[in-house]
Image (cartoon, rainbow, N blue to C red):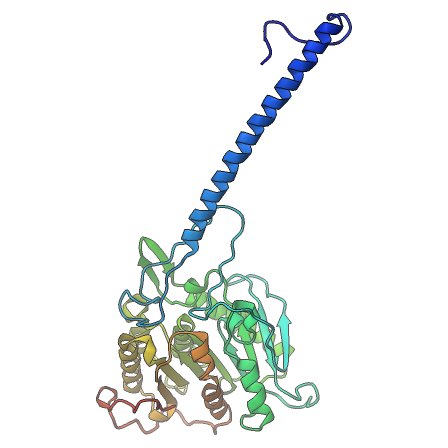
Length: 393
Protein backbone atom coordinates (compact mmCIF):
# COMPACT_ATOMS: atom_id res chain seq x y z
CA UNK A 1 0.00 0.00 0.00
CA UNK A 2 1.34 3.39 -0.88
CA UNK A 3 2.30 5.90 1.77
CA UNK A 4 -0.17 8.69 1.03
CA UNK A 5 2.10 11.20 2.73
CA UNK A 6 4.76 10.79 0.03
CA UNK A 7 3.44 10.67 -3.54
CA UNK A 8 5.41 8.32 -5.73
CA UNK A 9 6.42 9.65 -9.09
CA UNK A 10 9.11 8.35 -11.34
CA UNK A 11 9.33 11.20 -13.77
CA UNK A 12 12.18 13.64 -14.16
CA UNK A 13 13.08 15.56 -11.04
CA UNK A 14 11.57 13.02 -8.71
CA UNK A 15 14.59 10.98 -7.55
CA UNK A 16 17.20 8.71 -9.04
CA UNK A 17 17.19 5.19 -10.43
CA UNK A 18 16.74 3.47 -7.04
CA UNK A 19 13.74 5.61 -6.25
CA UNK A 20 12.18 4.89 -9.62
CA UNK A 21 12.73 1.16 -9.14
CA UNK A 22 11.07 1.29 -5.72
CA UNK A 23 8.14 3.22 -7.18
CA UNK A 24 7.70 0.60 -9.91
CA UNK A 25 7.69 -2.19 -7.29
CA UNK A 26 5.06 -0.40 -5.25
CA UNK A 27 2.96 0.21 -8.39
CA UNK A 28 3.11 -3.52 -9.19
CA UNK A 29 2.04 -4.40 -5.64
CA UNK A 30 -0.89 -1.99 -5.94
CA UNK A 31 -1.93 -3.57 -9.26
CA UNK A 32 -1.87 -7.07 -7.75
CA UNK A 33 -3.88 -5.87 -4.78
CA UNK A 34 -6.42 -4.34 -7.14
CA UNK A 35 -6.69 -7.58 -9.10
CA UNK A 36 -7.26 -9.52 -5.88
CA UNK A 37 -10.01 -7.09 -4.87
CA UNK A 38 -11.54 -7.41 -8.31
CA UNK A 39 -11.43 -11.18 -8.06
CA UNK A 40 -13.16 -11.04 -4.69
CA UNK A 41 -15.86 -8.86 -6.21
CA UNK A 42 -16.29 -11.32 -9.09
CA UNK A 43 -16.65 -14.26 -6.69
CA UNK A 44 -19.17 -12.32 -4.64
CA UNK A 45 -21.14 -11.43 -7.78
CA UNK A 46 -21.05 -15.08 -8.88
CA UNK A 47 -22.60 -16.20 -5.59
CA UNK A 48 -25.25 -13.48 -5.86
CA UNK A 49 -26.21 -14.64 -9.35
CA UNK A 50 -26.37 -18.29 -8.25
CA UNK A 51 -28.66 -17.37 -5.36
CA UNK A 52 -30.83 -15.26 -7.67
CA UNK A 53 -31.06 -18.10 -10.20
CA UNK A 54 -32.10 -20.47 -7.42
CA UNK A 55 -34.85 -18.08 -6.32
CA UNK A 56 -36.02 -17.77 -9.93
CA UNK A 57 -36.07 -21.56 -10.33
CA UNK A 58 -38.21 -21.92 -7.22
CA UNK A 59 -40.52 -19.13 -8.37
CA UNK A 60 -41.01 -20.69 -11.79
CA UNK A 61 -42.01 -24.05 -10.36
CA UNK A 62 -45.74 -23.35 -10.78
CA UNK A 63 -47.71 -26.23 -9.27
CA UNK A 64 -50.62 -27.73 -11.16
CA UNK A 65 -52.44 -30.97 -11.36
CA UNK A 66 -54.77 -32.47 -13.86
CA UNK A 67 -57.03 -34.64 -11.65
CA UNK A 68 -59.90 -32.89 -9.95
CA UNK A 69 -59.79 -29.71 -11.98
CA UNK A 70 -62.62 -27.45 -11.00
CA UNK A 71 -63.04 -29.19 -7.64
CA UNK A 72 -62.94 -26.33 -5.18
CA UNK A 73 -59.42 -25.03 -4.59
CA UNK A 74 -57.79 -28.23 -5.84
CA UNK A 75 -57.99 -27.42 -9.51
CA UNK A 76 -56.25 -24.79 -11.61
CA UNK A 77 -59.44 -22.84 -12.31
CA UNK A 78 -60.51 -22.08 -8.76
CA UNK A 79 -57.21 -22.51 -6.98
CA UNK A 80 -55.07 -19.62 -5.82
CA UNK A 81 -53.37 -17.36 -8.29
CA UNK A 82 -49.95 -18.52 -9.47
CA UNK A 83 -47.09 -16.15 -8.57
CA UNK A 84 -44.01 -15.92 -10.77
CA UNK A 85 -41.10 -13.76 -9.62
CA UNK A 86 -39.16 -12.11 -12.42
CA UNK A 87 -35.82 -11.26 -10.85
CA UNK A 88 -33.99 -9.95 -13.88
CA UNK A 89 -33.77 -10.26 -17.63
CA UNK A 90 -36.80 -11.18 -19.75
CA UNK A 91 -38.68 -14.39 -19.02
CA UNK A 92 -41.54 -15.51 -21.26
CA UNK A 93 -44.01 -17.90 -19.68
CA UNK A 94 -46.42 -19.55 -22.12
CA UNK A 95 -49.14 -21.76 -20.76
CA UNK A 96 -50.85 -24.56 -22.61
CA UNK A 97 -52.86 -25.82 -19.64
CA UNK A 98 -51.64 -29.37 -18.90
CA UNK A 99 -49.90 -30.23 -22.16
CA UNK A 100 -46.53 -31.90 -21.50
CA UNK A 101 -43.39 -30.12 -22.53
CA UNK A 102 -41.94 -31.74 -25.63
CA UNK A 103 -40.12 -30.63 -28.78
CA UNK A 104 -42.62 -28.83 -31.00
CA UNK A 105 -42.49 -28.65 -34.78
CA UNK A 106 -44.65 -26.71 -37.22
CA UNK A 107 -47.98 -28.42 -37.81
CA UNK A 108 -50.19 -26.67 -40.35
CA UNK A 109 -52.58 -27.98 -42.96
CA UNK A 110 -54.00 -26.01 -45.84
CA UNK A 111 -53.65 -22.30 -46.46
CA UNK A 112 -53.20 -20.11 -43.38
CA UNK A 113 -52.72 -16.36 -43.73
CA UNK A 114 -51.38 -14.16 -40.95
CA UNK A 115 -52.93 -10.70 -40.87
CA UNK A 116 -51.27 -7.54 -39.65
CA UNK A 117 -52.69 -6.51 -36.25
CA UNK A 118 -55.43 -3.93 -36.52
CA UNK A 119 -54.89 -0.52 -34.89
CA UNK A 120 -55.73 -0.37 -31.20
CA UNK A 121 -59.24 0.96 -30.67
CA UNK A 122 -61.27 -1.06 -28.20
CA UNK A 123 -58.58 -3.48 -26.99
CA UNK A 124 -54.88 -3.99 -27.61
CA UNK A 125 -53.57 -5.10 -30.98
CA UNK A 126 -53.20 -8.83 -31.56
CA UNK A 127 -52.33 -11.35 -34.22
CA UNK A 128 -54.97 -13.01 -36.37
CA UNK A 129 -54.61 -16.16 -38.48
CA UNK A 130 -57.09 -17.08 -41.22
CA UNK A 131 -57.51 -20.63 -42.53
CA UNK A 132 -58.89 -20.75 -46.06
CA UNK A 133 -60.70 -23.85 -47.34
CA UNK A 134 -59.43 -25.89 -50.29
CA UNK A 135 -60.20 -24.37 -53.70
CA UNK A 136 -60.76 -20.91 -52.19
CA UNK A 137 -58.42 -19.33 -54.74
CA UNK A 138 -59.87 -21.26 -57.70
CA UNK A 139 -63.58 -21.03 -56.91
CA UNK A 140 -63.68 -17.24 -57.11
CA UNK A 141 -67.48 -16.95 -57.31
CA UNK A 142 -68.19 -18.76 -54.07
CA UNK A 143 -68.77 -17.06 -50.71
CA UNK A 144 -68.11 -18.78 -47.39
CA UNK A 145 -69.40 -18.86 -43.80
CA UNK A 146 -66.94 -17.89 -41.07
CA UNK A 147 -66.05 -19.42 -37.71
CA UNK A 148 -64.17 -17.16 -35.24
CA UNK A 149 -62.15 -18.85 -32.49
CA UNK A 150 -60.60 -17.27 -29.38
CA UNK A 151 -57.12 -18.12 -28.05
CA UNK A 152 -55.87 -18.18 -31.61
CA UNK A 153 -52.35 -19.29 -30.65
CA UNK A 154 -53.74 -22.73 -29.79
CA UNK A 155 -55.98 -23.21 -32.83
CA UNK A 156 -53.73 -24.14 -35.75
CA UNK A 157 -50.08 -24.60 -34.83
CA UNK A 158 -48.59 -26.28 -31.75
CA UNK A 159 -45.34 -24.40 -32.33
CA UNK A 160 -47.10 -21.14 -31.45
CA UNK A 161 -48.01 -21.98 -27.84
CA UNK A 162 -46.99 -25.57 -27.13
CA UNK A 163 -50.31 -27.28 -27.91
CA UNK A 164 -53.14 -26.93 -30.41
CA UNK A 165 -56.69 -27.93 -31.26
CA UNK A 166 -55.63 -29.23 -34.70
CA UNK A 167 -58.49 -27.30 -36.27
CA UNK A 168 -56.70 -26.85 -39.59
CA UNK A 169 -55.89 -30.56 -39.98
CA UNK A 170 -59.43 -31.59 -39.05
CA UNK A 171 -61.14 -28.97 -41.22
CA UNK A 172 -58.90 -29.82 -44.17
CA UNK A 173 -59.67 -33.53 -43.92
CA UNK A 174 -63.43 -33.11 -43.46
CA UNK A 175 -63.66 -30.60 -46.30
CA UNK A 176 -61.60 -32.62 -48.77
CA UNK A 177 -63.62 -35.75 -47.93
CA UNK A 178 -66.87 -33.85 -48.51
CA UNK A 179 -68.07 -34.40 -44.94
CA UNK A 180 -68.53 -30.67 -44.30
CA UNK A 181 -68.99 -27.70 -46.60
CA UNK A 182 -66.07 -25.27 -46.95
CA UNK A 183 -65.81 -22.52 -44.35
CA UNK A 184 -63.31 -19.84 -43.37
CA UNK A 185 -61.83 -20.14 -39.87
CA UNK A 186 -60.41 -17.08 -38.10
CA UNK A 187 -58.13 -17.63 -35.08
CA UNK A 188 -57.95 -14.52 -32.88
CA UNK A 189 -54.92 -14.44 -30.60
CA UNK A 190 -55.23 -13.61 -26.94
CA UNK A 191 -52.99 -11.11 -25.14
CA UNK A 192 -51.71 -10.52 -21.63
CA UNK A 193 -55.20 -9.09 -20.92
CA UNK A 194 -56.89 -12.41 -21.73
CA UNK A 195 -58.66 -12.76 -18.39
CA UNK A 196 -59.95 -9.19 -18.56
CA UNK A 197 -61.13 -9.44 -22.16
CA UNK A 198 -62.85 -12.81 -21.91
CA UNK A 199 -64.96 -11.97 -18.84
CA UNK A 200 -67.94 -9.65 -18.54
CA UNK A 201 -67.58 -8.84 -14.84
CA UNK A 202 -64.65 -7.98 -12.61
CA UNK A 203 -63.74 -10.43 -9.87
CA UNK A 204 -61.43 -9.80 -6.93
CA UNK A 205 -59.23 -12.62 -5.72
CA UNK A 206 -56.21 -12.61 -3.44
CA UNK A 207 -56.40 -8.81 -3.37
CA UNK A 208 -56.15 -8.57 -7.16
CA UNK A 209 -59.07 -7.60 -9.40
CA UNK A 210 -59.36 -8.90 -12.94
CA UNK A 211 -62.04 -9.11 -15.61
CA UNK A 212 -64.85 -6.99 -16.92
CA UNK A 213 -63.67 -6.10 -20.44
CA UNK A 214 -65.84 -8.49 -22.47
CA UNK A 215 -67.87 -5.64 -23.96
CA UNK A 216 -64.70 -3.97 -25.28
CA UNK A 217 -63.44 -7.23 -26.76
CA UNK A 218 -66.85 -7.81 -28.34
CA UNK A 219 -66.68 -4.39 -29.99
CA UNK A 220 -63.27 -5.31 -31.39
CA UNK A 221 -64.70 -8.49 -32.90
CA UNK A 222 -67.92 -6.95 -34.21
CA UNK A 223 -66.92 -3.41 -35.20
CA UNK A 224 -63.28 -3.88 -36.18
CA UNK A 225 -62.21 -7.44 -36.97
CA UNK A 226 -65.36 -8.82 -38.61
CA UNK A 227 -65.70 -5.89 -41.05
CA UNK A 228 -62.02 -6.32 -41.96
CA UNK A 229 -62.50 -10.05 -42.59
CA UNK A 230 -65.67 -9.46 -44.61
CA UNK A 231 -63.87 -6.85 -46.72
CA UNK A 232 -60.77 -8.95 -47.37
CA UNK A 233 -62.38 -12.35 -47.99
CA UNK A 234 -65.47 -13.64 -49.81
CA UNK A 235 -67.67 -14.24 -46.77
CA UNK A 236 -71.34 -14.71 -45.99
CA UNK A 237 -71.57 -11.97 -43.34
CA UNK A 238 -75.03 -12.62 -41.85
CA UNK A 239 -75.52 -14.20 -38.41
CA UNK A 240 -76.77 -17.48 -39.85
CA UNK A 241 -73.34 -17.96 -41.43
CA UNK A 242 -71.19 -16.56 -38.60
CA UNK A 243 -70.09 -18.63 -35.60
CA UNK A 244 -67.82 -18.04 -32.63
CA UNK A 245 -66.13 -20.47 -30.27
CA UNK A 246 -63.64 -20.94 -27.48
CA UNK A 247 -62.72 -22.97 -24.44
CA UNK A 248 -62.44 -22.21 -20.74
CA UNK A 249 -62.73 -18.41 -20.40
CA UNK A 250 -63.08 -18.39 -24.17
CA UNK A 251 -66.11 -20.62 -23.64
CA UNK A 252 -67.92 -18.15 -21.40
CA UNK A 253 -66.94 -15.35 -23.79
CA UNK A 254 -68.58 -17.27 -26.64
CA UNK A 255 -71.70 -17.78 -24.51
CA UNK A 256 -71.78 -14.06 -23.68
CA UNK A 257 -71.52 -13.16 -27.37
CA UNK A 258 -74.36 -15.55 -28.23
CA UNK A 259 -76.62 -14.11 -25.51
CA UNK A 260 -75.81 -10.43 -26.12
CA UNK A 261 -75.05 -10.44 -29.85
CA UNK A 262 -77.15 -13.20 -31.35
CA UNK A 263 -77.83 -10.88 -34.26
CA UNK A 264 -74.14 -11.21 -35.22
CA UNK A 265 -73.21 -14.73 -34.13
CA UNK A 266 -75.84 -17.31 -34.97
CA UNK A 267 -73.84 -20.24 -33.58
CA UNK A 268 -71.49 -20.54 -30.60
CA UNK A 269 -69.14 -23.28 -29.41
CA UNK A 270 -69.10 -23.15 -25.61
CA UNK A 271 -66.29 -25.57 -24.79
CA UNK A 272 -65.37 -26.45 -21.19
CA UNK A 273 -66.71 -23.04 -20.09
CA UNK A 274 -65.44 -21.45 -16.87
CA UNK A 275 -68.95 -21.13 -15.46
CA UNK A 276 -67.52 -20.69 -11.95
CA UNK A 277 -66.44 -17.14 -12.82
CA UNK A 278 -67.76 -14.52 -10.39
CA UNK A 279 -70.10 -16.88 -8.54
CA UNK A 280 -71.51 -18.38 -11.75
CA UNK A 281 -72.17 -15.03 -13.39
CA UNK A 282 -72.29 -16.58 -16.91
CA UNK A 283 -75.27 -18.68 -15.84
CA UNK A 284 -77.04 -15.76 -14.16
CA UNK A 285 -76.38 -13.60 -17.21
CA UNK A 286 -77.92 -16.18 -19.54
CA UNK A 287 -80.91 -16.35 -17.21
CA UNK A 288 -81.61 -12.62 -16.90
CA UNK A 289 -80.41 -10.88 -20.07
CA UNK A 290 -83.38 -9.73 -22.20
CA UNK A 291 -83.54 -11.59 -25.50
CA UNK A 292 -85.08 -9.83 -28.51
CA UNK A 293 -87.98 -11.82 -29.95
CA UNK A 294 -86.99 -10.79 -33.48
CA UNK A 295 -83.65 -12.65 -33.25
CA UNK A 296 -83.66 -16.46 -33.41
CA UNK A 297 -81.94 -18.17 -30.51
CA UNK A 298 -78.32 -18.87 -31.48
CA UNK A 299 -77.44 -22.53 -31.83
CA UNK A 300 -75.17 -23.61 -28.98
CA UNK A 301 -72.64 -26.38 -28.54
CA UNK A 302 -72.17 -27.06 -24.81
CA UNK A 303 -69.59 -29.52 -23.52
CA UNK A 304 -67.49 -30.44 -20.51
CA UNK A 305 -65.08 -33.26 -19.75
CA UNK A 306 -65.99 -35.48 -16.82
CA UNK A 307 -62.35 -35.22 -15.78
CA UNK A 308 -62.89 -31.52 -15.12
CA UNK A 309 -64.79 -32.30 -11.95
CA UNK A 310 -68.31 -32.93 -10.71
CA UNK A 311 -68.84 -29.24 -9.96
CA UNK A 312 -68.06 -28.28 -13.56
CA UNK A 313 -70.55 -30.88 -14.82
CA UNK A 314 -73.18 -29.62 -12.38
CA UNK A 315 -72.72 -26.06 -13.61
CA UNK A 316 -73.00 -27.08 -17.27
CA UNK A 317 -76.23 -28.97 -16.60
CA UNK A 318 -77.54 -25.95 -14.72
CA UNK A 319 -76.74 -23.72 -17.70
CA UNK A 320 -78.55 -26.08 -20.03
CA UNK A 321 -81.64 -25.95 -17.83
CA UNK A 322 -81.55 -22.15 -17.79
CA UNK A 323 -81.32 -22.03 -21.58
CA UNK A 324 -84.27 -24.37 -22.02
CA UNK A 325 -86.27 -22.17 -19.65
CA UNK A 326 -85.36 -19.12 -21.76
CA UNK A 327 -86.80 -20.63 -24.92
CA UNK A 328 -83.98 -22.63 -26.45
CA UNK A 329 -85.28 -25.86 -27.95
CA UNK A 330 -83.53 -29.21 -27.74
CA UNK A 331 -82.64 -28.84 -31.40
CA UNK A 332 -80.89 -25.55 -30.62
CA UNK A 333 -78.41 -27.10 -28.19
CA UNK A 334 -75.81 -29.80 -28.71
CA UNK A 335 -74.76 -31.16 -25.32
CA UNK A 336 -71.77 -33.38 -24.55
CA UNK A 337 -70.20 -34.71 -21.37
CA UNK A 338 -66.93 -36.15 -22.65
CA UNK A 339 -66.02 -39.20 -20.58
CA UNK A 340 -62.63 -38.80 -18.90
CA UNK A 341 -61.73 -35.63 -20.81
CA UNK A 342 -59.78 -33.00 -18.91
CA UNK A 343 -59.23 -29.26 -19.26
CA UNK A 344 -56.53 -29.18 -21.93
CA UNK A 345 -55.90 -28.77 -25.63
CA UNK A 346 -55.56 -32.49 -26.27
CA UNK A 347 -59.09 -33.10 -24.97
CA UNK A 348 -60.51 -30.22 -27.00
CA UNK A 349 -58.68 -31.37 -30.12
CA UNK A 350 -60.39 -34.75 -29.75
CA UNK A 351 -63.78 -32.98 -29.96
CA UNK A 352 -63.02 -30.64 -32.87
CA UNK A 353 -64.50 -32.97 -35.50
CA UNK A 354 -68.00 -33.12 -33.96
CA UNK A 355 -67.78 -29.38 -33.26
CA UNK A 356 -67.09 -28.63 -36.93
CA UNK A 357 -69.86 -30.98 -38.01
CA UNK A 358 -72.24 -29.14 -35.67
CA UNK A 359 -71.21 -25.73 -37.02
CA UNK A 360 -71.52 -27.01 -40.59
CA UNK A 361 -75.09 -28.16 -39.94
CA UNK A 362 -76.04 -24.69 -38.69
CA UNK A 363 -74.37 -22.95 -41.62
CA UNK A 364 -76.30 -25.10 -44.07
CA UNK A 365 -79.62 -25.33 -42.21
CA UNK A 366 -82.83 -23.92 -43.62
CA UNK A 367 -83.82 -20.49 -42.26
CA UNK A 368 -85.55 -20.69 -38.92
CA UNK A 369 -88.90 -19.05 -38.22
CA UNK A 370 -88.56 -17.18 -34.95
CA UNK A 371 -88.32 -19.10 -31.68
CA UNK A 372 -91.36 -21.36 -31.98
CA UNK A 373 -89.74 -24.75 -31.72
CA UNK A 374 -90.53 -27.85 -29.70
CA UNK A 375 -88.80 -27.84 -26.35
CA UNK A 376 -87.11 -30.88 -24.92
CA UNK A 377 -89.79 -32.57 -22.75
CA UNK A 378 -87.27 -34.00 -20.24
CA UNK A 379 -86.02 -31.77 -17.42
CA UNK A 380 -82.25 -31.57 -17.42
CA UNK A 381 -81.76 -32.41 -13.77
CA UNK A 382 -83.54 -35.79 -13.87
CA UNK A 383 -81.96 -37.21 -16.99
CA UNK A 384 -80.11 -40.45 -16.32
CA UNK A 385 -76.32 -40.27 -16.55
CA UNK A 386 -74.80 -41.23 -19.87
CA UNK A 387 -73.25 -44.68 -20.19
CA UNK A 388 -69.50 -44.65 -19.72
CA UNK A 389 -67.66 -43.59 -22.84
CA UNK A 390 -70.74 -42.18 -24.54
CA UNK A 391 -72.15 -38.73 -25.05
CA UNK A 392 -74.64 -36.81 -27.10
CA UNK A 393 -73.99 -33.86 -29.35
